[in-house]
Length: 149
Image 1 (tube, one colour):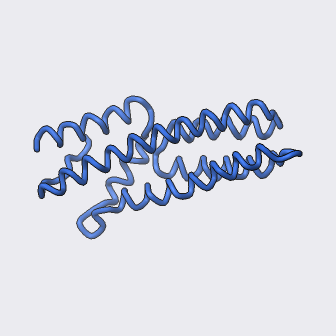
Image 2 (spheres, one colour):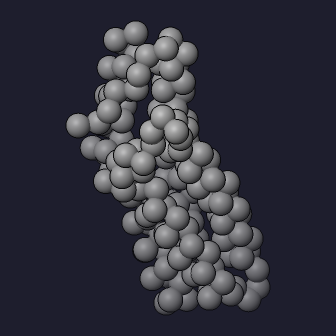
């Protein structure tokens, strides 16, 4: 069991060190308590559902002729806000760059940013799913989740 808890602490620390997560994620974790033990998981699950839709919408919009850069920018803005609210730092950063390409109406820049955004989002999702799996495994043994210091 100590091995699982150490694995969880190490994985979470690595996500912060590699810039996947920032302090906003820690703030979310502080809101989780006995009355809402799955709060972070539920918030992140909603984030994933919204992000999947936004990424699909951006991809669809970039395939249209003519391209509606204002609409793509609106999606990128929404993705940036929701990413920032859950502490998804690398995704948030890419969204900021994406928005500048939209403003410049740079189609190739937007396409590259979308690919980068999809890649970073997929990495984030994989890492967070693993984090939640470790938490479930620890809880299944009736142990507490170690907190980040």
